[in-house]
Amino acid sequence: MGARRLEKISFEERVARWLRQYGRGLLGLLVAVMIVHDIFGTHGFLAMRHTQDEIKKVQANLDMLNQENLELQQEVKDLKTDPRLIEKIARDDLGLARPGEVIIRIPQPPAQENGSPAKR
Image (cartoon, rainbow, N blue to C red; front, side, top):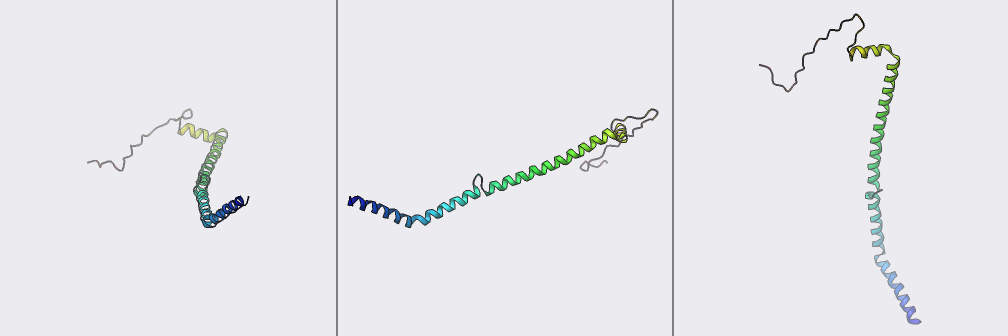
């Protein structure tokens, strides 16, 4: 029994020595690994920043679409209620006229491009 007790104490002493010798290094390594994981990991700081940037872009796009939706709703309301707007669209876009009116269209000359060579 005495030999086993010496062996057990000897093993505990070896573990204690090993921890004293390498414990700080292992703790430092563990802390370094955790810091790297918190920064570069799947749910780390950089991934969180990337996700926040995407959320901001989607929110800006959503705000723009909501504004466009409000403008379209107002346009629909105006088209349903404003006869002058309906007449303007009929005249300008569809080329319609009231009875007795004559429409004269004057063709526009084609615009010259800035990069085209000059005529001689």
